[in-house]
Image (cartoon, rainbow, N blue to C red):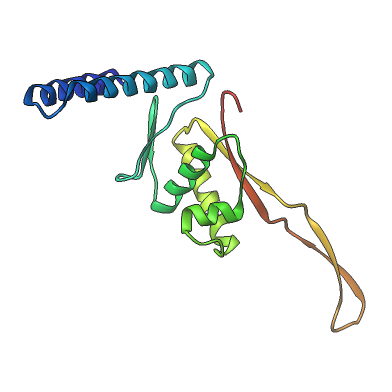
Length: 169
């Protein structure tokens, strides 16, 4: 955790304790929670994982050495992927997490994804967000004018997304 944040939290705890608004048991619980958070952060840092801090009010994502402000949907997109970790999210899961509805048009999701990736690259985001697409398909059909069989290649649809740390990923 940021040492400045810890210093402020310690001062606030001391003020609350002096006012009698905080009992000794609560202070012990807060201290234990803070120690657990610090231990988790140390573990993440050792593993090469860059911890992200999400500020939903300002829709800002912060990490050691940078930050990026995003729109409402892109912010939810990154947040959903980050907390899913190690698990690839299918397009329906992303639609549900970001838009609250699984029946969002794929084009809407794709455009959000591509704009998001572009903005994160410019901000030197420490994670890589990638998509997994279905295989290209070749479809045969009969031409209505000539009656001859023709083939068309259908572009693959994105079927899932994942997030990986640049260092470990």
